[in-house]
Length: 275
Length: 326
Image: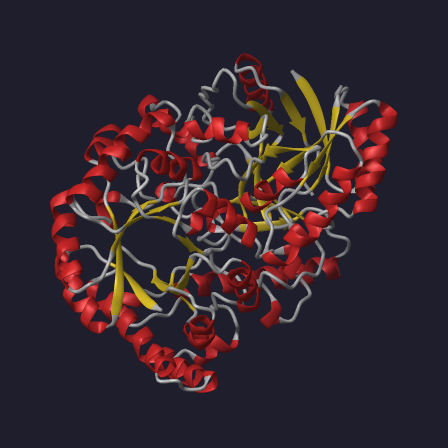
C-alpha cells in the first residue's frame, strides 16, 4: 500500500514536506489542492510548480478539486485542458459529479472519486452504536463499491475511490476488477457547505453567511468545538474554513491503517492540514 | 410552474389540491427495512414513524386520489446511499409503488441507485434529489446521462447562477426549494445522521479561536460567532414552531417567483413531510397567492411586494438571512 501526502496550498508545500520528515512519513505521491472550497482551487502556475517539484523528486502527482458552482466549472475546465496538455497521466480527485462528467474530455487525466462523493455517514456519534451489528451492516458499507455502479465508474476511467476512517469501522466489498480505496488520515469530514463561518468574518451583516461573499480568513482560523449538546465522544471536533472534521486518535488511526491493508486499499492519504 | 406539497395521507390530497398544490411527494419505508433496521437507519432520509406513509395501501389510495385530480405523486427514495445488500428491499418497494400504486416518479439522491433503477426499470421516471448536490450544468448532464427527468436543485443557489444552469442545460425539468427547511451546511455534504439530533442545530457551548493573533481580533471573532448563532437560530425558524404560529417563519424564496417563472422552473418544493395538514395548507396558500400575481402578468416588483405582505416578516427579510436564493 502506498502513502500520499496532502498539500492544500503552494505556500504549505515546504512546511508539509518538513512535517512529514519529522513524523517519519514516507510517501510516493503528493496530493495538491482543496476538496471543500472552489475559491481555493489552485491556479495553473501553482499546479505547475508542485507538479515540477514532484517530477524532480520522483513523486506521483494528484490534483484535488472541490465541489463546484456554475461560476467555477468553466474555470476548472480551462485548467484541466492545460494540465491534460502536459502529456503525463495525472490523477484528478473529483468531488463533484459535474467535474466527473467533463473528465472524459481529457485522455491524460484520470478521475479519483473524492470522499465527498462517497456518502457514507461519518457522524462521530456512530461510535455509540458500534456494538449493534445489524445496524453496522448499513453504516459500514457504501453504495459506490460492490454495486453495478462501481463497474460504471471503472468503465468511465476511475481506479481509486476515497474514504474517511470511520469511528464505527468499514466493511467494504470491492469488485475484483474494480476500484481501490484511498484512506484519509487523520481528519474525517463531518460536514461542509458553501456558507462559510470564517469566510463571513469582517463582512457586512447582510453579506454574512451567503454562498458568494468571502473575506478569505480561512487560512488564519482554526475553530475547536469543545462540546456540543449532542456529542461528548472521544474525538476532537474541529472546523477549518467551511468544513467540520473529527480528529482521529491514535487508536482509530491504527485501526484504519490495519483495515486499509486488509481490504487491499491502494493508499493512505496523510493530510497534516486540510486547508 | 407547480407547487409541490408533501402529503401523508389521501385525505390531505383534496385540501392541498384545492389550496393550489399541483404535485405531491411522500415517502414510505419498506416493511423489510424496518424489520431489519428498526428506526436506526432511515430508508427515505426521514424518520419512518413521523414523516412517511405507513404502508403501500395508503400510498395506493393517495395516488388514486391525486390522479383523479390530474396531479402526479412522487415517491422519495432518498437516503444518502443504499449499499448493495439493501437494494433488494428497495427494488421490492419500488416495484410495488410503481406497478401497484402507480406513483409517477421516484426521487433518488444516490447515483448508484439511480443507475441500478435505470438498468432494471427503464420506464420509471427518476428525479434527482437535492442531496446529490447538483450545483452546475455539467452535474446536470451527468445525471441526464443516467436517464433522469428532473433535477431538484440544492438550497442557496443565487438566481443568477440558477439562470446560467437552466440556460446551459434547458432540456430537463428543474425544481427548487421554496419554503420551510434550512440547512446550515450543504445538505448533501453533511455526513451526520439526524437520528442523534441535528449536529449543527444546537448552539455550540463553546467555540474557541485556537490561534488568536491578539485580543482585539479574538473579540471581533467572538462577535462574529454571535452573528453566526443568530443566523443559525433564524434558519431553524427563529426558535419557534411554525405550526403553532400557523405560518412559515423559516427559509423562503417566494420573493423570486417572477424570476423563477421566467427561468422555466417546473416545480416549487414545500419542505415538511412531518408538518400538520393545517400548516402545509397555510404554506400552499401563501405561495399560491403570490404565484397568482405572476400568472396574471404582474411586474416582479409587485409580486415581491405581495410576497412580503404574505410573509409578514419584514424585519427578518431585511436581514437577508432566510432567502433560498441569496
